[in-house]
Image 1 (cartoon, rainbow, N blue to C red):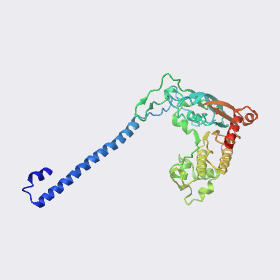
Image 2: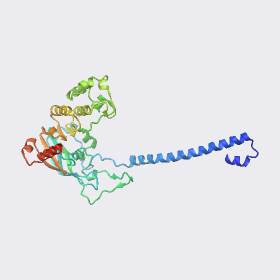
Image 3: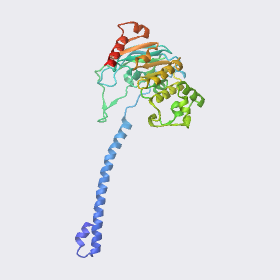
Image 4: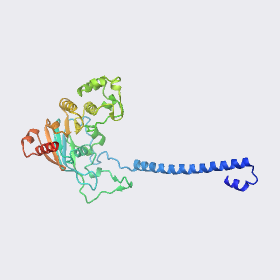
Length: 349
């Protein structure tokens, strides 16, 4: 169009010349817009390529060992026995071991409290129990460098993860991963509520009737609060459970654990962020509703585990001691007494 204007301007009328100049400017702007859109598309496609790469190449968890896999009975675990057998692992290659030769046995229905300083390895026990980190090197997924997208080779000179975790005498590495995780109820420090109704948050599988749900709400002292809501069990839970207090969210998580009726219940510092009144409700719920369950409590407040059958003190990735609260408190040289004195000193300062 610009060429037409330059070549034929002598023979063109003023009106045609004006139209030609206007059209050439519009075409120029259109060309700039096309180039800009192409650049934006290429920029956005880079993000798409990265997402597609990770969706196709991200290492996946291995469901279970191919060597002598086990399909446990339908009611497994029926006793709730837990055994850690020489468990040693690191989170990934290049990092130090977080658990070192950890061994202990829990009887079915036993309540055990786990305590220790920050970094002692308390929560790392759950990584082994839920198979978030595999102890069998053959089951460990390959690691990938998120910056480059390339696979990271493990250092073959490092000592590998080792040990076993058994539930009711069965090595959990030989059981389907989803089956293992379904068999254990966990109540974390930060309670997790999902977008949906209160009914859905309590009964994710949809297997329980309303009567059972109301009964459980009464057990965790949430019945009156839910009943006062206009829609009751059909009340929608806001994102992250923001329409409930931290204590109420935690009590709903306890109700979910009761409805699941798992033989093993794990609490990872579940009372660390709640007030004293809610803490008392939770302790009462544990004593009254988890009578037959094996309860594994990782404690932030030592007073919350003093009624446990046994207390295990962790230190530097090792089991420092494990015994009844009475025996440990009576021993002036016990690690528990040292921890109590240390925490008391920190609070005074």
